[in-house]
Length: 426
Ligand SMILES: Cc1cc2nc3c(=O)[nH]c(=O)nc-3n(C[C@H](O)[C@H](O)[C@H](O)COP(=O)(O)OP(=O)(O)OC[C@H]3O[C@@H](n4cnc5c(N)ncnc54)[C@H](O)[C@@H]3O)c2cc1C
Image (cartoon, helix red, strand yellow):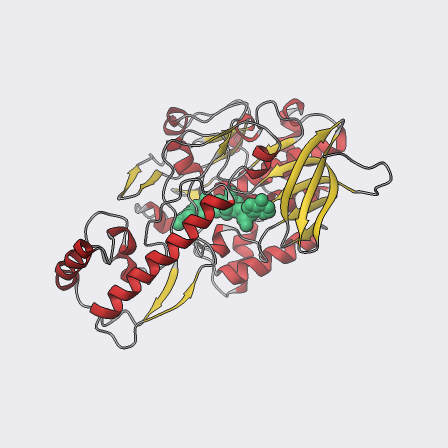
């Protein structure tokens, strides 16, 4: 990518790519700290998996009475609940069923709240825009974006990859890691009128028969190998498994979306035939499959499974993350418990692509081993790593110092001023 000398190009201090939980927090943090920040998003709404895939249950901000993640993520979730007239759950109370401690939010209200805060932070928000090319030239990134009107260029002091798929890092030519076996995706729909559906005992034999004929698969109605009523119990939300190999790119993602809809259609045919309820309807679908895992960056440092399970406090830790290692395999889930006294941390090194300059990554693509990322990928942690990258990017853009050379205390101080909890404070 060459610049023409006559071309006038907009410069921004910080460019954030992707407006999921990580990108929203990164952009708001950079903007509030005073950076000129652009946030680009391929969809027409912020929220990423929370809105586009319909999984609106951020976990976990507090563990057994201790708040471990605060800052921008906590603020957005609190504002969303307040807007809906719902109090925040009492963080002092702990349900031993870990996922019950997640904070349920209305995704549409959440999107509106985020949008207001993004704009209030002075961020230049650009929907329907994708990254096309990225190259580092002298002291800044030359960026090609693709909007509805075609390709155009900007330059940026620092880039933060929040795409969930490490697209920016890969396009910049930096190393990424594709796990040998990615967790499956999920396609959420909304089912209504499930009340009259026959019991599992009644449906299991016909399910087996249809399965032998090939009209239905176990993964269409649940997460296991045999008959499951998960799909009905959850009314279609987060209740199936869809193969997601290569979902970091458009080709693989297209296969996943097509398979997601085919799976929902098989489930629908089965329930229409055997569900016995005239009120049964499948009347809404997420706009995308929810991708659990596709690719991570190769960072300066990696959070190993042992680091995670032992709650290693990295010397350059910027935030906490707590969640059992919740790995989904295609025909089962494999949850490895985590003691509530163990508090894993995320180091700065896991957010900085190896050999990259002035580029960071946040969210589910940080450098962590397969077990560790199965805990660190959750939404509260994505907000926290996003905010950490937003703070580093602001300091790097305003000082010219590379993010890996910034004094840690300076980053932590900025984060604290914006409500974040940094590890030494617990
Ligand atoms: C089925 C499922 C259930 C889950 N359940 C839970 C749960 O109960 N609780 C919990 O806390 N977490 C849960 N998670 C995990 C969590 O939702 C995700 O790991 C998290 O949302 C990842 O955040 P992110 O910001 O890294 O990426 P994403 O949420 O994927 O956001 C990435 C954003 O970047 C945009 N983007 C991507 N590529 C480009 C590009 N090239 N140019 C411009 N924009 C781009 C996307 O459109 C998207 O908006 C679940 C995940 C799935 C899939």
